[in-house]
Image (cartoon, rainbow, N blue to C red):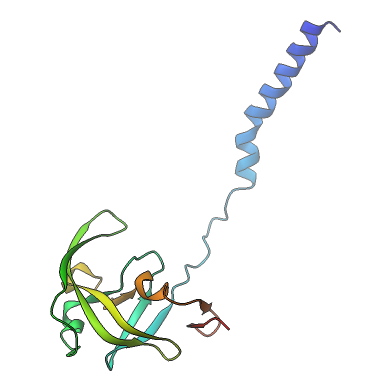
Length: 153
């Protein structure tokens, strides 16, 4: 076999492999039903006011709806106006507040800040998202079996 014939045969083999790639990928595609999305809700106390919060490790800040924030009597005056950008790109105006004591059954934060937004910017079942400004302060273990977060040992 000449060098030209060998190169032609090799090129044909590579082309055949490339053309067969979509069929091979389709055979290994994701299952028709996606796995369940795990979410974690925690009871968080904001200076004694209990609130069910969605743990959101993709959120920079902890966010409270305005009606919930109004129940937290010890919150500061607004520190500053802020604009949050949601995952869908929507901009949400809010105000940054200091809350002296924030905690769960296993974790406490002293002197946390929260962003308060009008209730219409949150899903009707959502009053709070617990963001990384609090979660990132400690090494934590997410315990999915019992649905909680606790300090790492």
